[in-house]
Length: 494
Image (cartoon, rainbow, N blue to C red; front, side):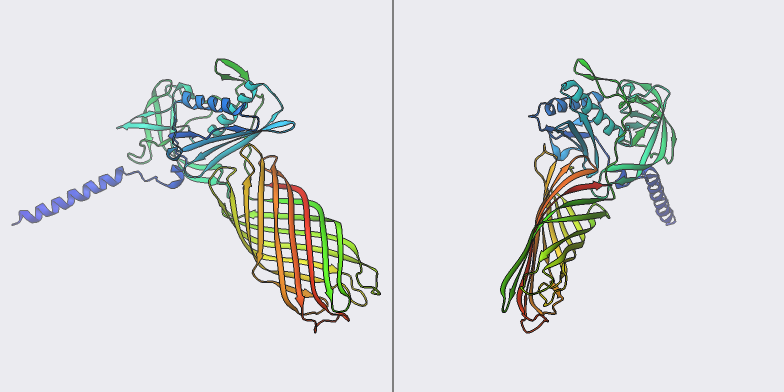
């Protein structure tokens, strides 16, 4: 009888012992940040250019050859299974080329960069720019290799003499604890890492090395696919090589140090100027219909946008113009009136992108307030009254690349006012207010920070009045303001 309790307690003790042992062998360092940059398989999105694929096809073949010769990533034909997608676009401008390349991780993290290239024609030199851009992007990935296998304290890693390691060199095992990403595009900016172990290399081949774990933060923490890093001093400078092999040839790449530019991450501001075609129609009880218009009215617009995170943005814009206009009522003084038009909108926007590519179609929904003011000098008797329209609005906007080869984006927008108000200095009581606001924007992407813009917008603000109200000697039935605006400007993202 006494043996059963003993057997029971011994079984419980053994169970707890094995549980503690299993827990001790379970790696404590696991998070989404570290897994977000995992790369084992690569898919090549067909490279493109706007010169009939003269360079893109050869460049894709070259970058494929670089990946294959490095022996660290496997190329797959299935995009959905790939850990990383490589895409690139070359755009020939009147006096230069713009080369852009993106590394798109399955986690939606993006590594991207671009280069402005002088207007050259030698295929070998342009392919050299493709290679230097790819090698710099690859060098920005915050680790150089991984552990392939582990047996007790012996490990095999996917780094060799081809990658710059040597026998008796110390390699660090690291864990990525935080990724600093662009709040809008999720482009990679930097990372924070901790050292979880050290490996002393005992044998080094061309693409593989073998080593012994000399330090480990916790037992069995280093395992298959643990990320590795080694001293940059021992690593060959891929970006600064003066000669780059292309097939069996040697071609020069640009001399001097090239530092990748950080993508915009906080917001943008813009300024534009242009012309407004303005018409105001009034319907008086006695005088009938009267129209005033100004066909070429200079105007200026300022825009500021703050990116709170990749999805939510805040936007403010102000537009202003002033001009003189003829008094439409005979006998009313003065004969010409100073008039100013102003518009502002403050919106909180939700931004949705179809995929993680740099030229992905975007759709925005916004909620905010807007105001339009048409302010005129007082006249005797009163003819044109100052008007202020406003209300709560919801906005919709779509942004699309004109083509894969073109650096031009097309944006279409529409603002619908949920509430509509009008303040009129004639004290007339509006019985109905209508507001319409829509337009299009073309953006030419000069660089990842700078864009040229062209905007064409159409607006209408109108109201019907109760004729028994107001201070006009000749009451007005209705008024409408119609504007067609053409603007050209600059946008700078930071």
